[in-house]
Length: 393
Image (tube, rainbow, N blue to C red; front, side, top):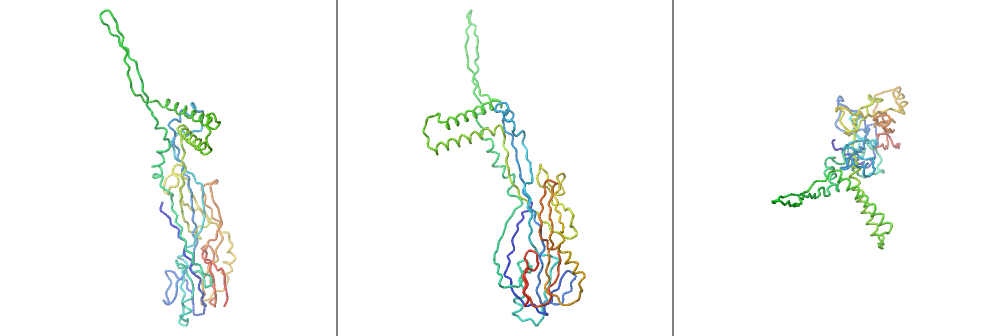
């Protein structure tokens, strides 16, 4: 996955400007015929939906003595085979604004506007999105947030993990075997027996090693009991007693791993973005696939369940849209364009049991209209491009 870096835009101070009739705001696109170069460009924001997915990677390692766990220790719930499983543990839906390429505007300024008026005509952020026109509202906070699609590479994590899983399995695995060899030697009518001792090193069988480990676990439990019950009749201070008990518990746990096996849990974070568009409303759009044995996979790979996102309009701007359609249209000079965002329901779904749903404002699903070309002070919502406050001069 590509590394994704989300940077919060620096919101500059909101400046004031008097909007006179000499200012005309034109919506521009690839087919727009420029009338003058004297002016300022700005854009309205659109809403981007960000989906953050947290995946739990569970690595199961079978203990070297797992086959003898029930026989020697009575343990049934042990790791029976090495495996790697994945599951989706969390889905988070957030939104952030970015410039809308379909909503760029050109502020055409006439020659009658003074230099002082031009210098304070409007305020934009770093991306060219209009913010507002009120100088008393100052925001100089800058913040950068770095996110990556993975916390760590699983291969790199395994390098240091496996060597410490079953460290006590490296105990002495051979023992000395002594064989007595008797040789009979006949000398004339006398028979003499001579004994020879043959010493060889023999590797212990898995059952022998498991039996020794089980006996050692029992010995550790006995030692802990004697330590806590005071059988040793030694007046240890509290810190010493706690230290010895902790060490014994740690050793017991490490030996039990030889029978129960080990499960390692790791978290992997992925991030996706989706830009809602009107012709995809009420349609489930694939984002990625999830496979229990592999985790997140690409949409073109075989197998796995498809995770989808669906945007549904709530319809809070329908009345405004109908009103604007019925309103009379003329070619009068227009003021600044602004947005009335639509409230939408966002659903990310794997299946009926795994889904996340939230409601948020989506700018591009709403309505775009204009202020009259009059004298205003205006403050815009930086996330949606909607009007936050208006002051008539």
